[in-house]
Every structure is written in structure tokens, then in C-alpha cells.
Image (cartoon, rainbow, N blue to C red):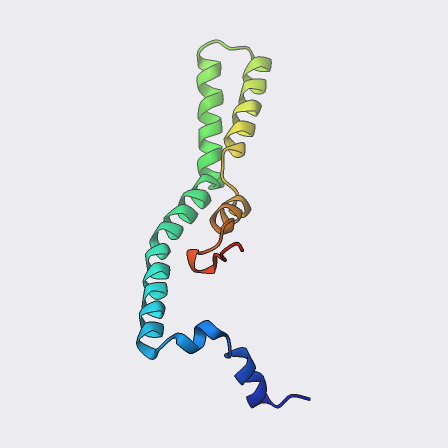
Length: 118
């Protein structure tokens, strides 16, 4: 069984890690920290857009308004109901899902994880 010190030594024995000095590591960590900080606001805004699109009260008001305008303009009950159902279906389809967002955002991973082909 390998001792913890030996295990740690082997984990950090990668040739590239031996070449890095403390200042270079500090610059890398600062760049990563800045990158992550810059992502915070855009991700928050995107999540706000997604969750506001799913606001039940707002969707309900919009659907009722759509239906009412159809009825006021003389559209038959059956057609107004069908059109309203379709309006709601399409409205919900365009709402970006959180899963789609995360898949897109993580599709290629952060640039520092790219590995050279060879």
C-alpha cells in the first residue's frame, strides 16, 4: 500500500508541473479566477431570462389576453381555443431549458482543459 506522501508525490510529478514556478501558478489562478468572475453576471442574466419565461402568472395573463383578443375580433370559440392551445404550446417550446443551456455551455469545456491531439 502506497503511503500518502508517495501518492501525493506521484500525483504532482507531471513534467509540466515541475516546470511551473510559483509566480506562473499565481498568474494562472488569477486568470481562472477572473474568467469565473466574468461568467457570473452573464449566467445570472441567462438564468433570470429562463426563469422569467416560465413565470406561470405571466404566461397565464398572456394566454388569456391572446384568447380574449381572438374572441373580440370575432374568431369562433373552437378556433380561438385551438389557436390559444397552439400559442401556449409554442410559447413553452421556445423557453430554453436549463439542461440545453448547460449542455451548450459545457460542450467544449473551458479552454485550459483542451488537450493537444497527437
